[in-house]
Length: 293
Image 1 (cartoon, rainbow, N blue to C red):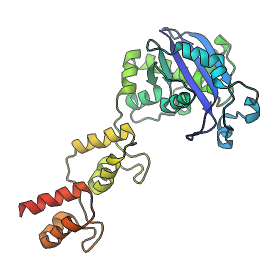
Image 2 (image 1 turned 90 degrees about the vertical axis):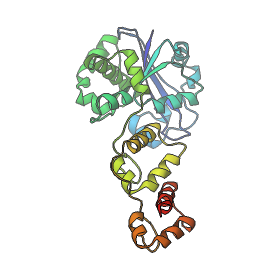
Image 3 (image 1 turned 30 degrees about the vertical axis):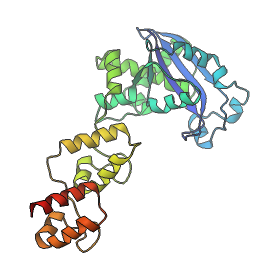
Image 4 (image 1 turned 180 degrees about the horizontal axis):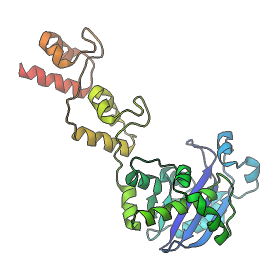
C-alpha cells in the first residue's frame, strides 16, 4: 500500500479553471517519503490575476511547460491510481474535480483531512494554513525539507503538501486513529449546527427551521444542496422538540401564526388554504387545522 499526499494549484476556482501545478508525496505505510513529485504544467487557459496573487505562479512561468498529461508526475499518479492505495487531500472535492477535468478518474481510497478535522475538532478551525500554526506544524517543516532535500516556495502546492503531510502525521499520532478509521470519517456525513453561508449565515439551523420553514423546505428541494448540509437539516428536523412557527408572509394577517388566525377567522384560513401560494408544509399544517373543525 502507498499513501499519496496531494495538492494542486490552479488558474482559478471557477468551472472553466484548470491545474497549473501538480505536487504530491508518495509514502509507505510507515509514513516515510519514498517519492517527491512537483511540476508546473501549461494549462489550456490563462492563470487569473486572483490565482497569481495566491500562489505566485505566472503565465510566463508555465509558458514552456508541458501539458499535464505529458508530465512524469501525472503518468506516475495514474500508475498509483488503485483502490489498494490511499490519497490524502485537504478539502478533496476541489482537487479531485480539477484532476477529473484532466481525464483522471480517481480509484484511491480517500482521506480528506478537512472533513476529518470537522469530526475530531467540531469547535475548531479547519483551514490548512491555520492549523499549520495552531498545531505547531511549521516548526517541523525545515527538518522535513532538509531530510528529503525539498525546496518549497510560499503558498505553492509543494509547500502545502509538506504541511498536509505533517497534519496527516499529527492526526494519526495525536488522535490514535487508523487509516481505515480516517477513511470512514471522510465518508461520514458532517452534522452542522449553523448555516455558514446564504440568507441565514451563522444562524443556528434549529432556529431557522422554527422561524422560517419555507426557507428550509426550499433548501431541501435543491438537487445540488451540499450533502452535509442536507444531512444536518434533516437530522435537526427529526430531533426538533419545539413547534415550527408557520406564519402568513402576506395578506390581511401578515406575520401572524396560522394557529392564531384560526382562533379569530377560520373562514380566512380556509380561503388561504385553497387560494394562497404557500409552502407544502404550511399547507399541510393548515389542512390539519381545518380537518379538526
